[in-house]
Length: 581
Image (cartoon, rainbow, N blue to C red; front, side):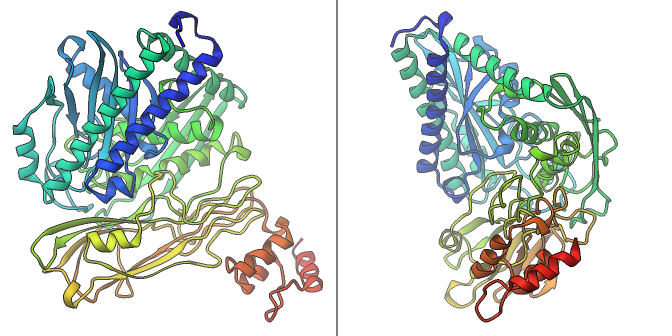
């Protein structure tokens, strides 16, 4: 089809908009198929984005870590401040992992490639990936500043006019433990950008566009207008929330997060004034990540069906005093910034629920991410680094139960056990759903899980100890920060982190040896609504499926189940529920 870009009709705009997303998805497929590490192939900790020539985000890959959505527009703007359009040539690739210019810690490298149609710059492809290693101390909250955490790469050109800068590669290779995987993943990012550029040029050629200017402007305009219309439906006011996070290993400070959502007409201001100050542990959050994980939940709750782009971010302003935990100054240590930042959607939801309770789900047992980073050497002398992540239950919402063992808000995938065992010297012993872990409610929270693994001995033992940075959720049901229910729903349950059956702190580094066992208990999601309003048949079905115990059915829902047949005791159930109303 040949189209005058100044007169795109709604149908053409929608078709081309969806095609931009498909181009990003094709780039993501290329990334996954050419990457070296399981962090990309299986964990999917990445994002591929497409921008117009002015650096406005128009589309990103469907599979993406949610925190990157609000970050990549800022990364692109920083690239263009360093290199204006006159300095950018075909075949260039710009990279950085600066936590304050990009995504908050050194392990994420952003790579951007300009897209030229002949002599004309028409856009940019950008790919950000979480890498296995950037040197320094490995995966611990105990680092005191960024210099302990590894190599910082300022904004520079990895490729100039299609030629790679071997000195940059040599510097990276000399500073990381698994250079082949790090360099391999970085080159996969460049390949993904090239696929994105090829797809964009093909679309431009087939559609008759001369660039992305008018199409991009319409995409951004529509998206912004849609979210502003949704915000206008809310009552103006200031809605607040205040939480105290559970203790975190390596950090003696008490951590408090305060948020105030000001809804005024068609915009929302998110203000974190009064939250804790910057800490000496590796938990500090650069502002890019705070802004991203604050805008994301509002967009998700109010306008989930419109694809994300720069227009979706415009109606939401985020503020936070500089020098605080959520807007730290360099050279603060930031490795574990997700231990804090992953909680922001839930904290924002807690404030937003006071304005629109029906739009907000209950708490997630996956928040914050529970993960273990392990490194050591195999018996053949080769270094290994592995990432192990596990997921709790998602909170229930109005009209539906929460799914079990689902990632939120980070949206990574579960790495198969076989892949993890092959990558690293650990052996899974069990991985199972936990009955009664989902918060009770009219709609039940998804189930959490319990995972246990060990360091093997014998022929599969590592050569020396395995260094592990172990993170759980810390969200005990009786703590100040449980997995919250909504509108009368109960909290998610089942939380713990143990080494050889003894509790250990979250985030601190451990030295594991053959025979050591690590147990991670992940909570279920919060419940939604009064548990006594849950349909009896749903409770019976939960018991028959093993999601709720017979005791849990009585205690949480007032539903009596015959132990032998697992059928409903209707008379006793009526009596139980009548007593509680």
